[in-house]
Length: 180
Image (tube, rainbow, N blue to C red; front, side, top):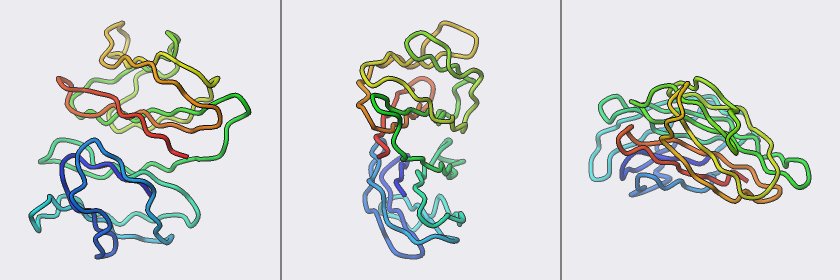
């Protein structure tokens, strides 16, 4: 299980602190937890104030990414099941998570080809398989050519990636995670 939280925080799993002073926009590596109902809490650093308290049921042997999304007053967990199986030789896999709470629905383009349309806040796309190499990835306001994110990462052969559109619309930015 990897995690991404919106400000410095302590992350707690089943009453054991597993991350301390975790900063915004930094994802941890995967943390080992057993399957079943696991209780996750996120507390703002320096406080006992729990901003997230959730108990998802995790499948044994599966990988997950847990994000804290929404505005601070409405923060909530978003759990994504990761598929870290290898893509075909010469390819990489990529998915997109819309985690910008005030951004409109978006379209996602890879190399100027629309691959996802009308993606709403908190949506997690399926993985797309693409040839390894540099790709231009754009996130546009749905139905427009107005890009809110425009990046050109180099995707490596055999790797699996997640692109997260995060932050508020005025400050929206991508975060590229290597899942495997």
